[in-house]
Amino acid sequence: MAHRLLRQPGCLRPLTTPQRSWRTLSKPTHHGPTHLKTYATATPPDQPALSSLPDIDPSQLTITKTANPKDLVPPEELVFGRTFTDHMLSIEWTSNQGWFPPRITPYQNLSLDPATCVFHYAFTCFEGMKAYKDASGTIRLFRPDKNMARINKSAASIALPTFNGDKFVDLVAQMIRLDERFIPNAKGFSLYLRPTLIGTQRTLGVGPPGSALLYLIASPVGPYFPSGLKAVSLSADSTAVRAWPGGVGDKKLGANYAPCIVPQMQAATSGFHQNLWLFRDPADGEDYVTEVGTMNLFVAMRTRDGGRELVTAPLDGTILEGVTRDSILALARERLQPEGWTISERKYTMKDVNAAADEGRLLEVFGAGTAAVVSPVRNISWNGKLIDCGLQKGEEAGDLAKRLKAWIEGIQYGEEDHPWSVKL
Image 1 (spheres, rainbow, N blue to C red):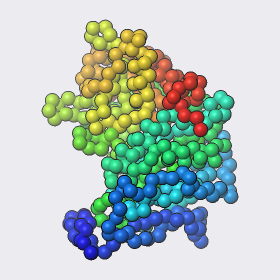
Image 2 (cartoon, rainbow, N blue to C red):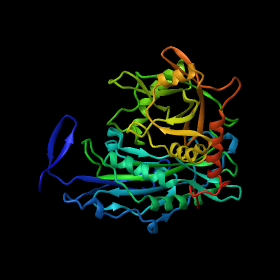
Image 3 (cartoon, rainbow, N blue to C red):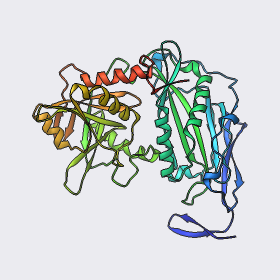
Image 4 (cartoon, rainbow, N blue to C red):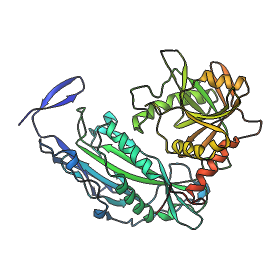
């Protein structure tokens, strides 16, 4: 048998036995709820090319309905990410057999070996998307092709398997129909969908996972701002860096999120709602604006020649390719440019934002993301100064943020016929 090198922390050594992969099977346990249990299977040393392995196949889907349907939580009592539907979708993958038949089963725990690589080396990526009910009760998805493209890009960046996005969306639709009763029938409410991909191989060696699990869970959610848009205050500090050139800040990886929590907690202790992430370029010492919390950031300002510009940071590898970001840019170019706006994806600094505020040119600032669509910003703390972001006293959102939110939600809830809204 040919030697294969398996990297372990601190050394390289030859692996002379077949690598073992792990597949998950549904098996009742004697204590507690049903778990997805892991079992070992040997992987031949000469594995087939990934391109020749089976892709996801919706025609092989099996459905096991829950015997214990959950009680519905009243819509007004929903807390983001706390309530989950009756079922989950799971699809296993191994490096020698490709994607296994998909299964929809009752929502249940996962059972994984303590040495599973996701626990040690963060082999995980995910997506955030939503299903909406329109006024007629039709269920809709918003630009799911964008989410599928992004999760595949994220997966490829950390040696996890990719898959056919259209086929996965087909499976997502089947699970949503099964759990349709969890989607509140009111505007502002939706079913949050969390596709997640993890490496499941049992190994402490650092290398491409020999097995993986793609699963989907769903959570009914209410409006991000239950009583209407509320402007937030930001702390801008370049000492904590979310992403950097050549890194993976443009991927939706689990490893990108945990390091952001402590800086966010530190901002909260100073009375701010969230961080504004900056990148101080060593070449010029300037603090470049990147993202806010887990959202993309937009700044609306008047130019010195009297024009109006809506600007956001470019996709240079440090910025997450937000679906809401892309939607705002597309709608703004279609509907705001004819009004005289310039829509820009370019680098800009906190010095630029501060100068616009000092000169009375800063119109409004807002974050953009799946959860809230837009999140207006009242002020930003930077270099010991509190920068006013253009909102009047008592005003919680600027005109631009409100218009963009209305346009996007109109498409999401089927009030506007648009190709971005996909009926199930």
